[in-house]
Amino acid sequence: MADKYDVIVIGAGPGGMTAALYATRANLNVLVLDRGPYGGQMNNTDAIDNYPGFTEVKGPELSQKMYDTLMKFEPDYKYGNVQSVELDGDEKVIKTDDEEYRAPVLIIATGADHRHLNVPGEEEYSGRGVSYCAVCDAAFFKDEDVVVVGGGDSAIEEGIYLSQMAKSVTVIHRRDQLRAQPTLQKRAFANEKMKFIWNAQTEEILGDGNRVTGVKYLDKENGETKEVSAAGVFIYVGVLPQTEPFKKLGILNEQGWIPTNEHMETKVSGIFALGDVRDKDLRQIANAVGEGSVAGQAAYNYFQDLKN
Ligand code: NAP
Image (spheres, rainbow, N blue to C red):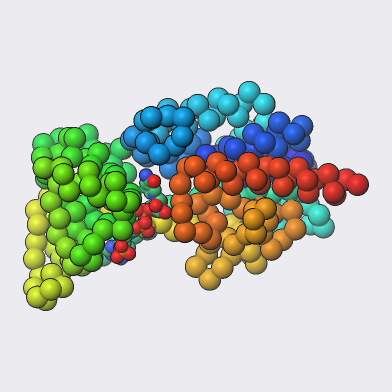
């Protein structure tokens, strides 16, 4: 027998926790499912300086505060690796590895995960010098030279973080301009430990069979292949939507993101989506939280309409 709820929220990042908070506070019976620790990507972020109310806060600390706020309202919170969602009349049937849950309202807040470069050596040396999480792994590279691949907010923010421990941080970017916010760029350019290799296409992660030793890249300005030595390579080349279990619902766009309207409604009635998993330009904690409040309230309205 499946456990029944009014609302099921998949994903306990800042957006999912906020949606669950609003729905529980509106007296709905809410289940939150996540396959990892609450907080999502916030846990992989060292310092957050663009979330109002905190001049600066550590990612795991903000995760804990958001979780504590949510749990004041006592939703059910369970581990669950969601495999599929099916429709059964008005009910959404959510299957995890070993459980089944049902609810008329589903809120998807599964976020996004790091994209891989897909170059030789990347998989081979993953965990042996190749990393996607500076906060998790920076300590292994104390006084070593490291490379960061990418030019967005994540690459630059994490590059700055790495510079606190590493001997040097070389950013390899495929263009001659960073994508990151101007304030991050300013800090990075002023950082004496950070160097930049522009117009460079990363072609291979080099290693000695045991650990990473460097990066081979194509200098696009003159067509030459060059190498830079490094003990660690941190890859931040964008994010991919976490939407595999929702493919059959017909709510994804061609790239796998979920379009919604301003009420966070997807194409399927009773299914809402918010945060990084949505098809949108700006992926921030602040707008995930805002969208979470909208989705939580919209879920309440939908549930009331269904009952009447
Ligand atoms: P992103 O903004 O999509 O940037 C990805 C970077 O990787 C870009 O510079 C891109 O180059 C480069 N890239 C993409 N594919 C590549 C490839 N195959 N080879 C080499 N380089 C490649 O991704 P993100 O930095 O992970 O950020 C994801 C989202 O989270 C964004 O919306 C970002 O604003 C947000 N975020 C915000 C903060 C903050 O507010 N503090 C912190 C982290 C993340 P091009 O520039 O040439 O496209």
